[in-house]
Length: 66
Image (tube, rainbow, N blue to C red; front, side, top):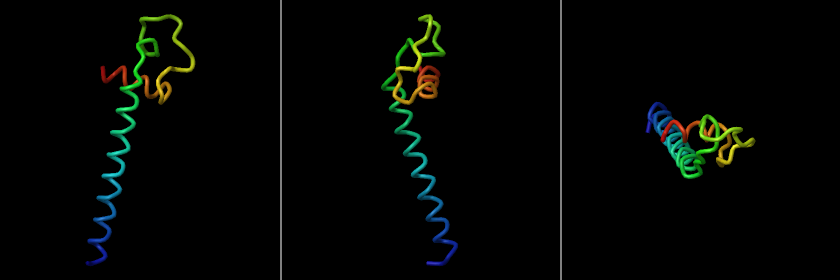
């Protein structure tokens, strides 16, 4: 196996690993969705800190996904 092939294999592995981590974090944020977390306007004041397991970033992602 040439050095270039090894680099492409390592790059592909890193990209697959990043994709898996992004999928897992996405699922965690969606499964811990709470309608009261910001940016939702159904409850005022919004809870601080957010109830989502990934915090306010996870709450924003889950809100956008729904």
